[in-house]
Length: 156
Image (cartoon, rainbow, N blue to C red; front, side):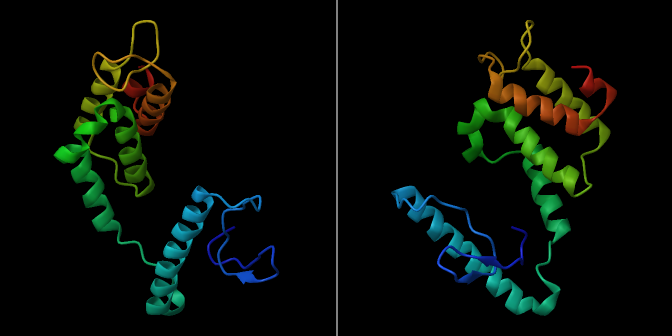
């Protein structure tokens, strides 16, 4: 459901925000899901209360800065995600694209070359140099290249 829509719960109560539907079978993961949703909804309610009727505010400049910084240099703690480089590129590029703040053409050209270096001669992409190709990094690499959208990126 859209943020702010009222939803009738199974028990007849009203929930201002839609919740993840379940099948009525309580499991460890369903309890964790409910706890996570409760935590997020408390934050949303606090934000709405402090913002009045104007709703939540996206601080675009801070988001662009964060994503741009992450795109140029990931902190060392992300080293364990070496096999996920196409995913990191896609997630960051997609966020910047949504914010209409894609990196400059030179950065996009380098990114295209990096992603192209992950492609195997027979097709498919790996998560990084010397790694095996498979569907997950191929999906992410293709999405990143489409997000870049240049002729060079689309020709990879």
